[in-house]
Image (cartoon, rainbow, N blue to C red):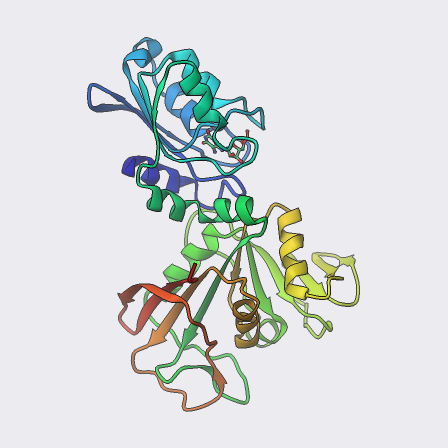
Length: 331
Ligand code: AOF
Ligand code: ZN
């Protein structure tokens, strides 16, 4: 199952809003084939692992491992449960059930009804963490929200008057770009947009960049750069070259944004600033995960304070100039 999770990660950034899935085929305690879901619309992990094998006659003597329940529906691809049945695997080991209402237990049920042994709940926590976007999207009908910021040793994001200010040091760019690769959407508030003119793209790793959004209720943004951006606002819906203005009509603007992202099948949102925007996601109880880089020596001595939260710290990594902390919402 660990190997399945490792293989599944190869689809990072390419599979949204689908899950990351890896598959391993085992014969006499030896891995004889592997596969993973490469990209949205393409074959599922099980099919890839089966197709990768030349001699499929021995599959009835094999076990199949998979971090997500095999699907049982016709989507962009035919049901994997049928494929597993066709080859009469001895036993199927499944990490976690699929929360997609089109599957939700029916894949496993189908295998069992046809006499295939199934064991579930293997490395369940790891499976859930890997596919946290997919689970959030199907169980709560909203994107998974990750916040990220860098703060000085004394807890500030920037001095006043506000200006572009580099706080974090060596090793933090890699983490930021890896997070950008993984997320379907990215958002900043209008002040951060105007002051930093951030690219918000993944430029370090092979793979896609998230779709870019700015939260700009009163249209105060300076949109001169020639890259695609969606501007959430209160005034107009209009397309102007690469800039798309989307008027949010809901009283609660963040809820409106969540609905828009959900309607557009964007299952994960990374928010990179500024302090007011980050805090508004925390206060609305919409943040799920927080990453901070806290400088070990850099002091600002006043200015824009870092957002406040009561999340659980689940990890801390010592970088050369900063401490990278990861927090989860208290469930
Ligand atoms: C699997 N193995 O590798 C994946 C599964 O539109 P489709 O046909 O690609 O189906 C997408 C749904 O299939 C997705 O929402 C999830 O329920 C399941 N994904 N299932 O057996 C896989 N990626
Ligand atoms: Zn499938």
